[in-house]
Image (cartoon, rainbow, N blue to C red; front, side):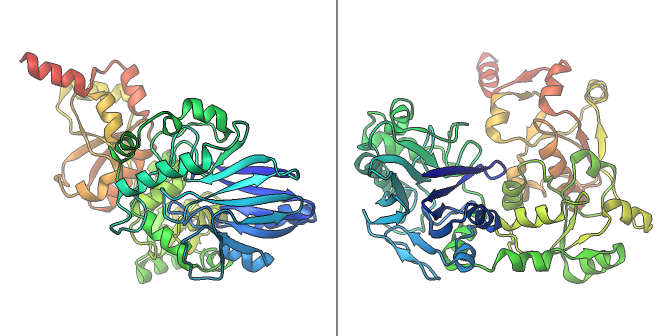
Length: 472
């Protein structure tokens, strides 16, 4: 028996390849399915099943495409209703893969159809569980993503999850390995560990959700301080439920090399978003006017999903040479299938063609410090509210990138604004969006918050602020 975890850091997502005696199964495949097919072909193995733990919200699965290309059967848990051919398992139903057995354990709570798959070895000894978003390492799935009805309130779903954990998962042997669908950084939970697998026994000792906690307290913990899900989550879930076009079709549409003239014509005729995925420093030095920066080497897919509201938005790409296909693929992972081409030769070709460029003014920390000591500056800290509350510069305003679509009309577009985040990635995204929306004087502070602290700026937090207010 072979069990391989395939972890994708950008999405904090784990998929699984299982193999035994010439047969294989894939659990929760990503959109691009060729790597699974090549892995099976290399091992001279037939992919028999594609198991889905639930209708994923944070990425678009490759289940339909993989089934078409391999003849594998798609399996969902009880209550799932799909727009494509699939086997809807009953609770406790078993599936053979070579000498091993996969048993479906219906574990509703994250969603109604959520199912944990128990892997039994050739001797029917429990070996591991693929828990999807039911159980993470150090956490459990959020209970607020199910389609809304009287039976699927966050409180009701949290109660279901409590029952599922205690009736289906906790009775399993302590040496069973827990393989979840996500790790730290995913928006599908609140406090996931950086570890991507663990023994069930250790989770019973360290995971609050498996502790001796009452049902009411469990529900309270899970339903308190839940951040709103990213706007693309329900759209991705719908795509996974109804079925989508193949990744090959997405590539055929998106991988068109366009000359600067053709790129400009396409932008003007289609209203496409120009998405620049190079480094923050490269973008700042020169970019196509009105382009939006979301760097490929950061948390690319989650930020695309959070900031580009329309999944059908035509997109034109500016990338480093050789990263065009990677960009199209990573956009498709979160449902952005309408890339219509990329700039051949990149920004250098645009400049050589004599086309107009724009820049983002940047300032280093020392120059910023000197300037702030001489005059009052308008500084926007675009980190998350929790980061800002923990510690921030006294004279800054918190305007999180996550909510930029809500606050961009608050300010005078003719005034200068200095932006910073933790390291420079989010502030450059924010700078690009503000520039595209008519802010003429946006200055990005290089180095981010840590560099500002090291330069000797005074910081505060909300505890200190509250104390000062009481003393005054």
